[in-house]
Each structure stands twice: as C-alpha cells, then as structure tokens.
Image (cartoon, rainbow, N blue to C red; front, side, top):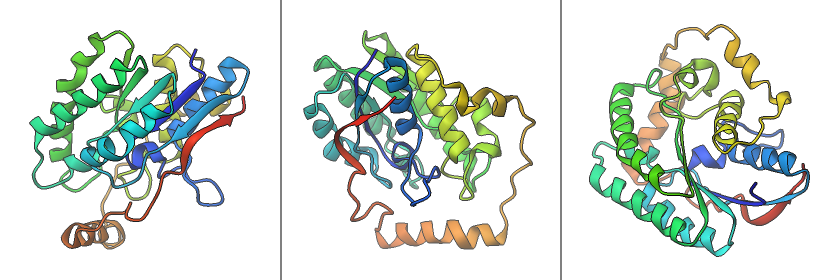
Length: 252
C-alpha cells in the first residue's frame, strides 16, 4: 500500500476534461489518490506536477527531479502524447528519454507507475496517424515492466476507453467518465479496490455511444485554435504552474 504519491505528465495527468465546479481540473491521478486513501483508511500525501501542453522533454526537464525530491513511495509517469501529434516525431529520442526517466525513478527506490494515455484515434482528424505512432511507442516501452517495482497501465490498448462516451467535446481529452475508467485501471493494476461509487462497471456495461462526427463547428472551436498555437509556437500550458506542487494530505 502506498501512502505518498506524485504524478507527473501533461494534460492527461493534470486532469483536463474532468473539471470541478470551480473550473479546477480533477482527473484520474486525483482519483487514484482518493482510492489509495480509502484503501489505507487514513490520509495519504499527494502531489500533481503535471502541466498541460508539455512534450516529453519538458516533463522530464521540469518535473522529474522535482517529483523525486518529494521522496514519495510511488510516482506515476506519462508523456509523449503531445509529441505524437507533431508533424515529425523523433521516436527513438522519445523512447530513450522515457526509458531514462523510468530508470532514474526506479534507481531511487521509488515505485514507478508507467501509463499510456487513452487512444483518441477513432475520433480525431488524422487519428490513424496517432493510432499507429502511439501503438509503436507503447510496444517499445512494455519491456520496462520486467523491472521490479515498475507497473505498466496500458490505457492506449483499452478498447472500451476508445468509445466516444469517455471523451470531452474536443475529442482529445478524456471526460469525467474517461478519467474514472483510467483511475480504475491504475488501482486494479496495483491491487487496490476501485470505489463502487465511481460506477465504472455500470458505465462500461452500458451501450456504446453514437458514432463520432467532426462538424465544421468542431473544426472552428477546437482544431483551428490548436493549429494556430502550433504556427505561433505557443502552448496551452504557457505560464501555468503545477496545480498541486507539494505533498498535501488526501482524506479517505
């Protein structure tokens, strides 16, 4: 049982798409912390250093050592999603950076939770490219699970998670149902009970959502602004800081 947990990554780990009433993103990592506290029946320490828009290099450079310095019992690590969406993806460099980061955490005696993100390829323009790239990158990292103290949670190949019911209107970020399913995948992988009140099994048993269609309004609202940021070298995470930079108690 883990009593201290730090999450690092990009928008997937920050929790975009699962917003609280005040607009603060919650997300799967917050839910995992709640699940750990419930299982421990006492408060646990939790920090979340993830920042939206970060490519893998930025995550490693800005968040990795800061997470290790907090000396948690477990660190979750996800990254590469923003790299996959770029016109050119240096696959060898990304895979090597990922491996180096995992070994760095592991060598400190900290348990590593490696997560692949959910696969939005069924719903996005050029989604097939993301599908192929994500599948290839995921396969190159699976062997890291041979290390003791490493757990791999493969959300990318969770076929059920591809259903449109789990995705936000931008079709790039998970919604609250999707984040709950990822949290369930994580807790199950580390042998922690999934709180029944999350309703994950009931949602999974419901009929699939309608087929996704990308309308002109979708392109105006979501695709064109994303292209605009790429052309101007901006990121959705510019000027942002971690939402939970230090270990703070999470009540059961």
